[in-house]
Length: 596
Image (tube, rainbow, N blue to C red; front, side, top):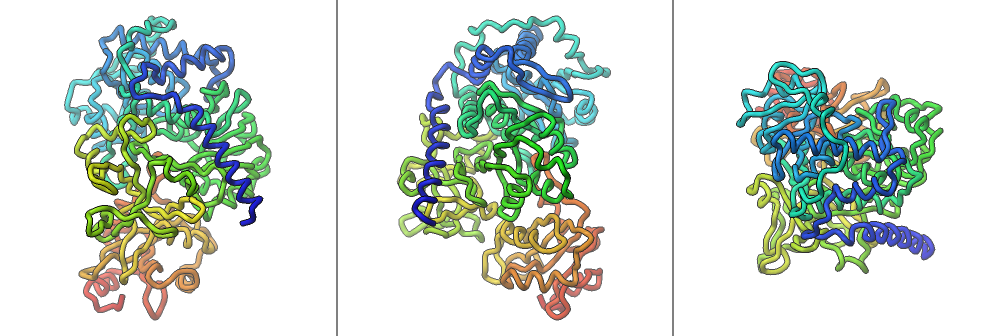
């Protein structure tokens, strides 16, 4: 790269960094200024401006605040006290932000429950939330009623829809509540370390865990993206991601509402209507999750996909094989990719837009950040430690686990963890580089190049060992997704009898031009032998979470057993290429009579 290009990238990085730091610098653990104070300040500055548009209705900042105040007074009038928790179990809606914003004004925390959950996962989340009140609507009320018997405490259920037996009419109760702000003294003894929200992990590998979001952490999300995006009063942010998760519910909202801009909120993502919606609403920014971008790229071309005013798309998980097509086809001037986890203390931003990178820390600024990569053993699933017992930093280009130093008192490095203290402690590494230090283990494998760019490689547990080599499921999925006829690919390791390690298996969503007979030669051409999937499963769609993450847990459990899988299954025969797995073929593989 030439000097001019390097200087341009450094300038963009530093501009984004200073914008972000400028907005978060005043956040402090012991400050009495809470996230609701930030939002009230925005209301006071832009009371008459439009704030949120949803399903044809638009409310101003002042109306948003009035909604929130009614929820605050409702809590006070119905025995919900400071320090209590209310569970919000609803899809995206106009007053979603107003609900938790209002409750935070009187010191009540809100547990944001994934509105897609049912059964055991739903009862688990409700139980660990420690709430005794739940807010539901017509869509979610039936699911909650089916798990009432599994709930560990007596619940008061308030519905924003038609109240059934055993439910209370929240919409009616709100009519009698004041729209004026509650007394600020109600929350006077709360600080940045007090809990504002509980946000749940997506449960891709088990039951969800509740991450505790303090006021200062919510401020980091909202203020951070208000700065990182360079948004202003003229911006409209398109949000189709679920409000129960931080990317849409905090990052997207903060970028707009802490800058005097507005949000165009939708109930859910629609690939068919995405571009017409963005264009019709005059949106200038959009929030994404990587798989959302993949769905859009897989859509047939339509005229409206370039008739928009988008200047920036920001989000996380945009994979390298999709990035450039997404940006060039849809004519998006800038992409801001970031990395972070709901519960963790590591944040990375790719301010200068290098395709495929999830963030950057230039070598000359490394000492100012709490983020490092350490060598990792994928078989023991633990960091490699030297003779002195300390972890070992990776070399340039070497894959390692990303860790973040925990420094209490530094708002950007604090780790608030989960409600479950044992689960929180499992994520902490001790004596990493020095006696007594503590680092948050992200569970993500990455590599960093000489310029400081970070690249996501895989999740710990997804990377597996086969034929003496480490196989990154993400890297293999990227290669497969670029082959003819493959729309989506997810890759995972499966056990094969008593063989050491795990063999690669790919679950594919394919188009009409896909040819299973040609796949073996195509895979051979782009991948070394140990990476090529030994097994293939074809599916009409791959199950995802509400935040567009693949649920591999069930795929791994079902494996390549035709007794458990109804969709077509194939085995890569060393002589014939991919052949269909019948019960007879399965038995031969498991008995070792077929060469693997």
